[in-house]
Image (cartoon, rainbow, N blue to C red):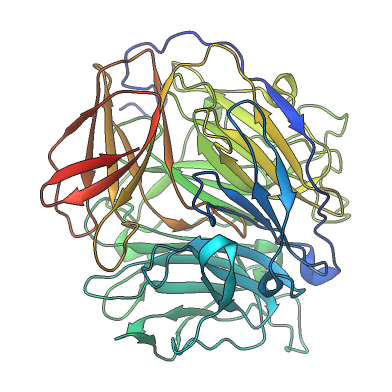
Length: 510
């Protein structure tokens, strides 16, 4: 593929109506607090009551978190606040959902200013501290998280990214804390492994970046505090974790890193990585063996470096990145929450969220204002997810010192869609590390890796959404975390399916 074009190797996508979103009234929730809550404000999305509709858990900072129970139907989004006591402890930076103990209930990794928590999920959105896992956490300022399942383990490997060391009297600049990796030892966790040096991460993500059968940990770091000697990082997850460097092909990148997302946007079989930042957002394509990434050309339209409305021409500040097809035209789009850190004088204060719509030629065009999601609050965590099961991706944003916002996707005349959730027996029930391959008509397949992490201080568990355009003939395949490939399964569009590992075959459950 010629880098100056970055054109999709697809047949022309059908013309769709421009995306339209309508604001939704929800119970008020505000993320607030002093210096230690300038960052964070994550949003976790997961179904904790088994009705097929995802709940929203919004971190509160100095305020208590809020769990919004989803009472939506196909016609309208509705939520009610119903927060269990285990989630009300102040100090929450963010949260990530995953099934740690493989019991079918979603658990939570809670990031805090203070000791982090692992909470065990139960029936009807109940949560309680895990007992007997051996997990210990010191008094940290934790701002990033990711998890993966390594071969032969009954528990996930957990990575916690820690920001400024608040106990260092020489701080805050140049005093980034150490990051911690928790690997299971049988049915519990041993002492954490230090990943040093730490450069003040605000996002991290385990992914098999080059589809080489090894999940590596990419970390996006905040240059504001590492000042001069740091950079973005990639850790190879061998028996002893190893920081990749120039001899591995790693190209040094320095930015005010806030969030990470990954997706094969151009369907060439390799994942692009999208990094949010102060000043500009960076979409990078892989140019080598999984360690080599380079920025795409400016003409692609993904830098989103200045506000497109609001009258403030100073540089923009990006936080959470969500990637998904909001029109179901078969082309993935990008949603980015935006907002000044607090009162940064060199950055825009009137800084609307971005909705970058992918065009048939592989470029992206801003639609945030016309779509109705151009909020000028200080956005932080967010989600791009189907909240009512109608096949259209909705949007939710946690704001600093302003109410949480939710928008329902009411775009007319969207294309076909499919929502898939893989499931396998034994450990790693939700198949973290698996790849879903969806082939629609004659277009190249869409590839989706199941991951936990990335974003900004929060993420989503559950169905993976695929836009299909006008295609009717759909085939799906799963490459499981152990490398085994399922036989293809023919399915109809416009439905949500759990796809279950059954030997070499797939069983589908509505």
